[in-house]
Length: 188
Image (cartoon, rainbow, N blue to C red; front, side):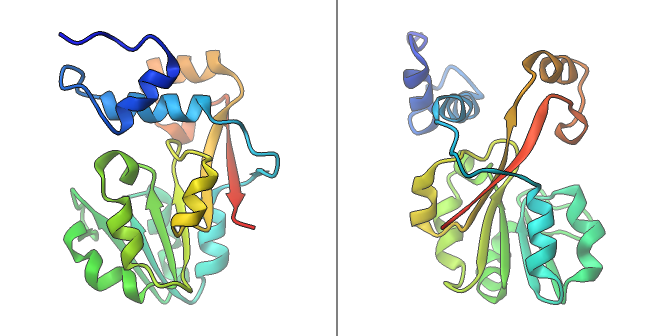
């Protein structure tokens, strides 16, 4: 069995080189990346879903990953396409990204695309003039993502670790956790 990481930086390396003996190694690596990144000074307290609605009203919107709030907003868009690796009713299989993303005016990508290795391929399918967001609590506030085609990073920061820990132990979904703020960082 391989050695456990001795530092946060070594743990962050699991995002790109996960050991086989830890099933959630990439997730732990991304969590370490998020913990180690400095907080940008120009974050705003807002939700990514509000930007999707603001920029997507009357337009074609594609969402990679099933976010519950998107379905409620669907009637506001000219077309809503939800791409999912494990499609639910109303979702499209992720394999249809090649047909859907080039037609989208607004594209929202789950931060999980960093974990499953699909981010680069999905970004390559997006139009240059599309607004492209990464959202979800795993989204890292990494400026380098802006140079790869993302316009908005919509994630979260823990402000009360005890409250978040308690909610997680109770099995609460992220949206019902207290102690974390939704934050947005937009490309300048």
